[in-house]
Amino acid sequence: MTDTILEASGLRKEFGGVVAVHKVSFNVARGEIFAIIGPNGAGKTTLFNLISGVYPTTGGELRFRGHRLARANPHERAAMGLARTFQNLRLFDNMTVLENVMVGRHTKSRYGLMAAALRLPTAHREERVIREQALKRLAMVGLEGRAHQLVGSLSFGQQRLVEVARAMAIEPQLLLLDEPGAGLTRKEVEELDDLVRRLRDDGMTVILVEHNMELVMGIADRVMVLDYGQKIAEGTPLQVQRNPRVIAAYLGEEASVGLHPEEAYVATQ
Amino acid sequence: MKRLAGRTNAIAFIVVAGLLAILPAFLANNYQVSILILVALYTILTVGLSLLMGYAGQISLGQAVFYGMGGYITAWLTVRAGWPPLAGMAIAALITAVLAYIIGIPMLRLRGNYLAMVTLGLNVIFELIVIQETAWTGGPDGFRGIPKFSLGGLVLRTDLEMYYFAWFVALLVLMLSLNIVNSRVGRALRAVHGSEIAAETMGVNTAHYKVQVFVLSAVYASIAGSLYAFWLGIISPSVYHISFSIELVVMVAIGGLASVWGAIFGAATVTLLAEFLRNTLPHLLRGASGEQEIIAFGVILILVMIFLPEGVTTGVMLRYRRWRAGREALKEIKKSAETMGAE
Image (cartoon, rainbow over all chains, first blue to last red; front, top):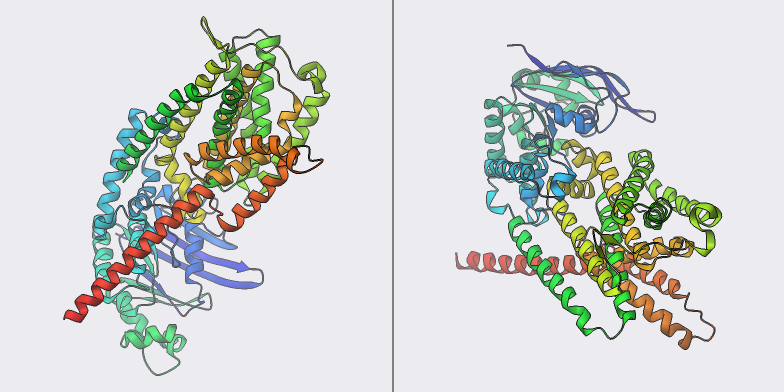
């Protein structure tokens, strides 16, 4: 039961002299929804960049499914079953919605330059599967009707969902969602909430960086709080909400986290 | 959309092949045929460079080297070693591929435009070698006596025969390239172009694909170089000057980055313009030698980069698409405003 999918111990990241992440340790269990919250500049996105390999770590160790990640490139981590989305969308603007998601099937297909150039039967076969699987992921986020539009023609919220679908297409064991709720309408947030639960029920582990406290407190099994690059709390949503250090970090003294989601959200902006 | 794109490409292909097949009937003389052979060879070169610039985001300022390697290795193998033309062409492409791979691996793992610098240097070295190593290359006088292309008993003796063969190869290269673009590999490349970091995190080995495109562009250049050698029977160093590498970049800029079809347009425009300038400049400007065409290309390149940085064909298409999308969005807004008013 206590099968750990991600182990971070003493993670550290410096940019020049600035310490963005300082000795952060945490474990994420397989099949849980783990949320990382904290004020802006707390180091949440930096932490994601360390896990996904966009930045090398300055110190500490990361283990994914028991393997040390230190030397793995981002694309190798993706092949190991680690996918992510980006806070500031990084979609492929030169492609359609469907093609964006099809890129997510890259590690699940094999055929190369020669097979592509000569349109060998393997290419045809794999291409059909890639398309089917991509369409399936698009349907899961409710965007199958937009499949053939250029991705830039979609609304911001829809573009976020395309990123989620693209990451889902990797069939990751661990999915990192960087502020998936930002810029979404209330209805879209509800759909996202639903989707993340379904992914967890399908056996996916989800780590979520999010400012929308209602969303976080509703779906997270456990929450970790960062402030100035350091971990200040970890526990169930209830435990974290009552933690005085968390309340202080977020709102000064009065309000508590989660009870007034709108205020907490505003306060973090 | 992909199926639709596939069909439009297939139709475009048949139309272009048909036009090229009947075109010689309308040509007045051999000079015009030979211009069109050049357009075919430059199309092959431009397709490769366009993939490299458009997808890998890298500029090669040394495509003339690979073009030259195709020519010189083919010449040496067919004349000195007595190999059949097709074998010479194939081995030349292979050696060129290996060289490109060796250069590409360290350069393309680094971010930034190191490749442009290295290929530029390579072009200088290559020119010196072909001029100096007279025993191997024939030096400034050129390598002479290269046989016509032949396969079995079939020999391509006339320019017209070469015209058909060159365009056959050019269309083949176009077809293979279109297949690549509309595939897993093509998507990976377009992803690299769209966002390198996102492509990496989606599992795309970006360095690997950049090297592959670079090698592919070198192989295309080598094949074009071999055809050039078979056609003229003599090759000399001046052809492989850096200015030719730059001319190829201008062809890509006009044809469009990452645009396979644009390659024909870019190659044709620059070749015809070069011929036109070469013939008219000396009449217009007293003392102009015709070599000053390169100035015109410089100006064109600057204008394209300022106003249509995606390339002329891609840029115009993109602007058209944006304009249409904008108009549709406007319509939708008006419609929703009307329905809201009705409510």
